[in-house]
Length: 126
Image 1 (tube, rainbow, N blue to C red):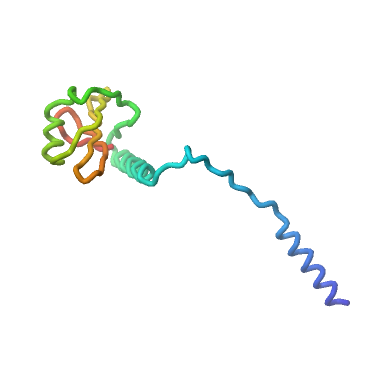
Image 2 (image 1 turned 60 degrees about the horizontal axis):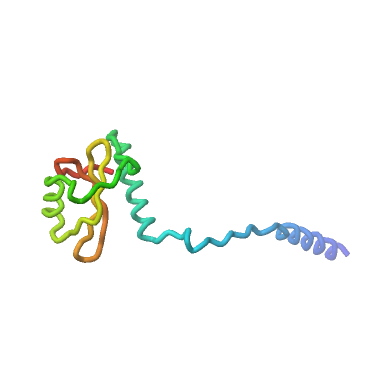
């Protein structure tokens, strides 16, 4: 009888332990999924901004840029891109109030990215 009582107590105890409601994850829409390249780029940008801020330098805010025509990009910026990235194509350009330029480029191997440079063609930390 003693064994039956102990077995019943353990059975009820284990039922109570596993009787919790499981949280269901809501399915994501296909439109809200972010490609791996975008998250990698966002992480790199965030890490660079955090590192720059930690060093005591001013980080360039990404939201301040307004689109401009590619022809409006200064010659120093264009020549810097041609020198450092031969065969690169400028796809879009934008400028912020501080005089920095954000230029989106595509390389011959199919990769693309954005460069942030000042008016003299010097790279600016993100």
